[in-house]
Length: 180
Image (cartoon, rainbow, N blue to C red; front, side, top):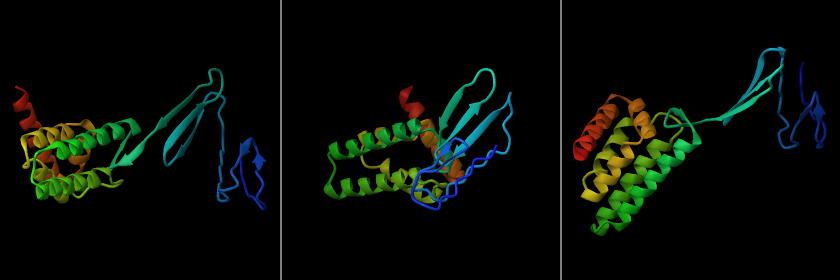
């Protein structure tokens, strides 16, 4: 079965059960073979849809995003961004000199930029900014340690390189010793 779309005008085209948007003139879908007992997988940049054919038909949708060089779920990204917002609130509430608050905000924005890039972060920039966050106040240190203790952040930092992985191990040990 082949489904193909080649528009010559601005109307919607429907061929082989595929309705295409008039805004995506370059859309081209080919399904060479469907098995009665098998499945079809449609994959895109933001997710994957697996459709089983035959007896028990089921549809599973799995969304994933690429962040910090790691494939993860949108929910984990939102959890990490929530922790970053908590660190930001801690900086705002901290009794720091204005220049220290500004520097801490800059360090946090650098950490956020490195963690949220689609590709692998620069380990030296990430570690330098993260270490700076730990030096402003005890409350900010605790908030930053909680951020770096997140599983997604650990995976991103660990994938960045040996320097970043060593830093993450040090942070994890420090947090564990504080909880004991």
